[in-house]
Structures are given as C-alpha cells and as structure tokens.
Image (tube, rainbow, N blue to C red; front, side, top):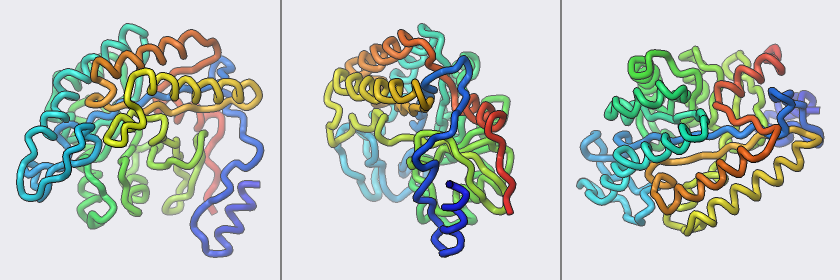
Length: 313
C-alpha cells in the first residue's frame, strides 16, 4: 500500500507522503518481543544558542522557560543563566537519574555546546550514552544559506568526533532547513536522522538516490511544554501525560508493537521540582515487562537488520 501511495505521489508531482504505513503497521520485531520501544533523548544545547558572543545579532528566546523575549544587539543575562543552569546543574541530576536506573539514552548534542563542557561530555561517553549530532549550533536553520549549513554539518561531525572519540551515527537538527537531510546524506556516515514528527515507527525515505532511515521525534512527549505556555506546570502534569501516552502505546503494542519518543532538556526537566516527575515515569516504565528502553542507534541498527533499506529506483 505504501509503495503504491508513494508512486501516486511521485506521479502527481506532490513530494509529501500523506499515507505512511496506513491501516496496518509493520511488525518491528523489537528485541525480547517487546511491546514498546521507549527511546529517550536528552538535548544538550547550552553554549550553542543565539548569543552576541557567538556572532549573532539577537539573544535567544526559545525554550528558556522564563518568558524573556529576544533582545537585539545585546546580551540577555537571565536567558544566558537559564541555559547555564542546564549545563552546570540540571544535566548532572539527569545523568544521575539514568545511572541509578541503569538506563542509557541518546544525547542530542549541539557541537559548539558540548565543546564548552568537556567534563560532562566525558561522563556521557563513559556512561554509554549515544552522542547524536544536534547540528553545529542551536539555531533555526530554515533560512541559513546552503553553503553555510553544509559547512556546519561538516564542523558538527568533526567537533563531536573529536570530543566523543567516535563519529556520530545519528542526526537531529530540531529546526531543520529544506536542505538539511540532503546535506547529511551527502556528508555520509549517518545511520538515521530524527528531523520528523510524522509517525510512531521508523521509515525509509529516498534522498539523493539513496535510502535513508528516519526515526521520528516528538515535540509533544517532550518537556518543552514546561516552557512559557505552561501546558506542564508541575511534575504531576509531566508524569500524567507521559504515563497516558505510555499506557495507550503499551496496550496497542500487544497486537502491533509501538515506539515512544521521550524528549528532555537539562535546563527544563533538570529542575528538581520537575525531575521528580521524570523519575516517577522512568520507574513506572521499568515496572512493565516487554519494554525496550533504548537509544536511537539501537533502533536504527535493529530496523536496518529487520527491515532492510529498499532499493531506490
């Protein structure tokens, strides 16, 4: 069904796939006959955000959780300090929570950010967390010239390889341009990217004549809802929403195994009053059998083995 839909879209000249897997999902064949694969990502961005110190003309305003607007042609001390909370304190709290539960996650690492905190980078690598490229800067690449973004892709790979001792195999921009996916395929060496919000299972796409794996991300099962809109005001809000999502997917996974993407930020969920909700959710998930808690690279390798890349015509 999906192949027919893709052919129809191609024939009509419409470049989007609005059908996906359709009514029947493929069997992921998760390890241990898991009903649910829970993939956890921790975003590390402090030191890569918009800032005059980084050559930008405006300060950061996104996901600061303090509601301060961007400031033009000046530094914003409180916004800077909210990011610094993540790198100075929040990240260590989260790494401890994972260590206590013997959980490894994907670290979505902005290259320029991780380069400014080698101590935490070393701790992440030592713990077995996957270092995923979160691009070179934590900016919106929508209108960045393709030549500049191509150089940023190269620099991200070079920087993270030097820091972690191994090149990143996964990619997630967060705010990609229309060119990003093609540029990372052109760079080569990546097993997957996460710059999509459109499904709940991995899928293959054709990019520049090659098959490329996409593992969907989520802006919804995400602590970004602690930001200014206050969709999450307390740790109970976070726990309840993640539990409900988990419960629905776990029930569905009895007949059709599913995947859940949980996205975290050290400066948001790393606050003590919020981290309690994360700790409760992790313990809740661990209390269930047939749940595979994994990294993006684990899912990618599994999917490639169980659902090999289709030939690109």
